[in-house]
Length: 342
Image (cartoon, rainbow, N blue to C red; front, side, top):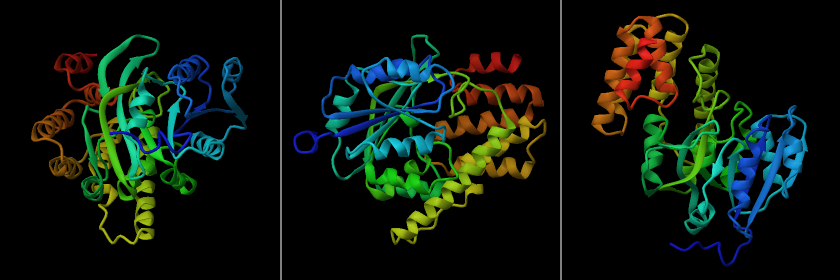
């Protein structure tokens, strides 16, 4: 479908790259945007007080850039918002990239009813060639109320990491009240279906680089401190969403955070990471949350069997298995067995 922004509103899309100590990757991110050759896009790069050579790398490129005192990704993105004007915004992580032609495809789907557009990201390992793994599973939809109901009932829906999302500018303004969150996309993902349509494209329009410093957790082992932080942040996001729903005049009942699959799964991981064993009551609540999810029965059965196995295994092997899944594994039985045997 043609975009209603292509002819009447310029620029159509703002791309904000925030960088903190990613000198080895930021060039790839910037050049992947410049290679799109779209004159109707704003590109702004924010160096968030890097202590490595990131700013020197950024300065060497023909791009509008600002160097600010370190304040974290959320505040750096808000700084970028204040220095752009386009009606839609893509926050591209400095360690990720866009595929050639990505912006052409993205802009062709944008209109005023779209609160968020998402697309698949192809995983790449450090500087290795892209793998066939896509985040999330390819799907196409344009939904609003169905996704809103899913969030109300389960607290989540399938969505890619930060670089695979485009947000309408008014959705981004909710970042101003998200002081509990270091990341940029949390509350926007939650709120988008209540503010407009969410469009999901099945195409891989970007690359997601997996390494040991990913904020999403891919590329790392179980870490109790990070798991606790993720759980606390999730609860705060849900509370923030309740406040947004109130301002929208919606009286919907939002699921309690500690009854969602995400929270219960992270709690399961935390028990194992701390050398313990999840209590049977918690384990049963997790299985119940899996059964309530809107995924296919095949996927839910696989998840249930995986967690049953992790619950039965000795702690060290359970740690290996959960780390394997946390790093994007789980589809390959052979890969899981190798992880368990380490």
